[in-house]
Length: 367
Image 1 (cartoon, helix red, strand yellow):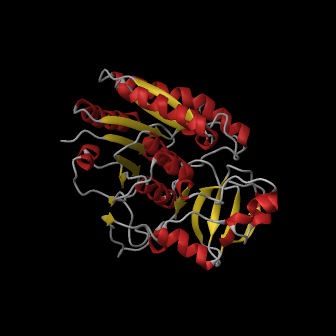
Image 2: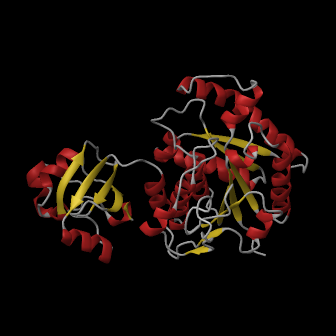
Image 3: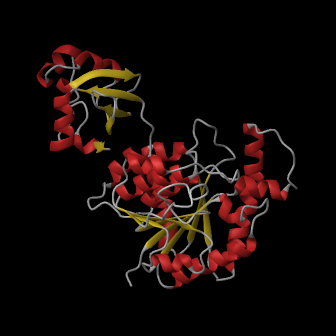
């Protein structure tokens, strides 16, 4: 069997079994399955939630106000506790783990993104299992990725993974909410993630984690665009991780796109948040979408936001639908001045020129 790089995301509800405590018995079963795959030659990456839940458990479930400092305190206590549990469980199988804590800032900055990728790949090269979590002890709302579903998609891209497994308390994505609709059926395969599919995704009801089915769908969208197959499945199936890796039909499987994004475009899609919006006319929409063209100043109808040269911006159609994201070669003030003008007129308008395009096709990701 072909050796794969596999990222497994474990949510708080999986690690606690829906209780107030870390379920070590279930965790050791998960580790046993991952160790088996590791012995088969696969590379394993774990994205773990549960730091705050582990902190609450260790401190005896104190009654605390839901403030950011209290959550950071629980995360600081729980993160070390959680990694010790992972370390001790993998040690049963004589495997080493390496902890990587990330914030959104680590993924937005290109140099820090590449450094994180180098660390991750070096751990894998030495057959050490990376255990990744968001650095909740220092992350504020402004620098949080927000949920470990999307963090796992970014980790999968960092690792150039073949497969991302998102484990949940649901069997997968259904045609309706199975908790309330007895006629709901499991969707076993998804080739394209569209608006109709997104409408099926509900929210988490466990109260223990931050991710629901909607965030898993976002993560699947990001990962499949980068050429990574994604499976959403329940975390209680016996031997399910190995069965998934060996191709058994469990949960909902999202097919990887045939033409995955290269590394730079993956970073554009998953790293920095957009700093502004650029509305284009119908002609530019067709050129960018249908022909794979760069965005020229001539096709820009309106500019919103205060962004600098090199920032990522959203490219919107005349109706306001997001068409693409890209790295802008001019700041917002300059782009406003050259919007609607021919490329040959840029220097006359600004007194300088950074090239004939506003956003080059190599710096642009279609949505």
